[in-house]
Amino acid sequence: MESWEIVGGARLVGEVRLTGAKNSVLKLMAAALLAPGRTVLTEVPDILDVDIMGQLLTRLGAQVVHDRPARAVAIDVPDQLDHRADYDLVRRMRASISVLGPLLARCGEADIALPGGDNIGSRGLDMHIAGLERMGAQVSVQHGYLQAVARQLRGSTIWLDFPSVGATESLLMAAVTAEGRTVIDNAAREPEIVDIANMMVQMGAQISGIGTSTLTVEGVDVLQPVHHVTVSDRIVAGTWAVAAAITQGEITVINAFAEHLEIALDKLATAGAHVDVHADSFTVSMDTRPKSVDIVTLPYPGFPTDLQPQFIALNAISLGASLVTENLFEARFRFVHELARLGADVQTEGHHALVRGQPGLSGAPVEATDIRAGAGLVLAGLVADGVTTIHEVHHIDRGYAGMVEDLQRLGATIERVRHSD
Image (cartoon, rainbow, N blue to C red; front, side):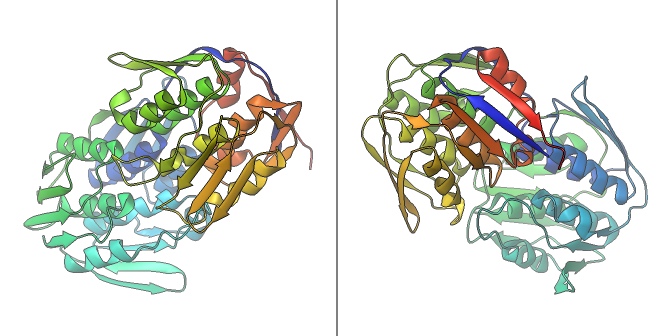
């Protein structure tokens, strides 16, 4: 067990370099199952979820080597795969559902334990199931497992009720070797969706409409393994951008693409930050107390729900009051009870949070309830008076590689504390 201890008050200054996106690399690892042979992914973040996904792929019959110094993962996929993903691994990470499409495409069947992951609200699998059924699969849930069978998937036109990232990925991976044409309407458009689609095109898939809300897939017989560079992590980039603003510091984020964060960076500019954009980096600086900004989370290209806790932390010490509206995950506001322990004034009702900015926060013990909530608490701790101790930091480690070390290099006073029990 570990906790992080933060002494607030430091102004963060310096550079951080991003690796690939957590929300992309896990799905890329699953997509590697579509092609026998060796697929190599680079710019892989050194996070726990990569290891969990590696264990899952190993259980399915692949050989996975994670070269941390090289930021690479090599996946050797056999001609024959096991089709069962057991609960002991799937419960630890919701992204495990990503193997559903590839296993159904490769094996003609898949048994996937119903997934776990962050407790931030309902994220049902109805759209995954409905889409696969339209492609000819027989799907049922028995004894805690989602069981799907389809000896040959057939192309179909699928309309998603909501632009779900997970459903778009599952159906896209199932469709690339299905018979005929598949059209996915109201598809998610996140950069991570673009990344996985581009990788599968490299593998030999025929996908058009990448980056739009309509994806058209012409099924092919076989795919080839590839070398692929993972898209950089826009959520980590956004977290560092808020860190610069909340500490009235200056941080340059390298290997970052500002076009993936247009609304978030515009909100920081509205709060009073200076944002300088370059080809593959951006710099955020702040020299005054920020002004409160209203936030409404929406699917991409709207404001990302994964940056909502970080902006609530920013608003907690800003001038004025702000309204934050969460449209994607109903339990995402759970963390504000922890933020209140630091002195934040946040009132929630339904999917709205009213944040009244305070002149300062005070350090206290708090608990991270999910990855992004943990990041929000870290940001609040950076500006709280005294010591903030964050427990359950394994959540943060799932999404932020080397965050403590990066914060130390930027000037924060923070350390990991190991506990014997």
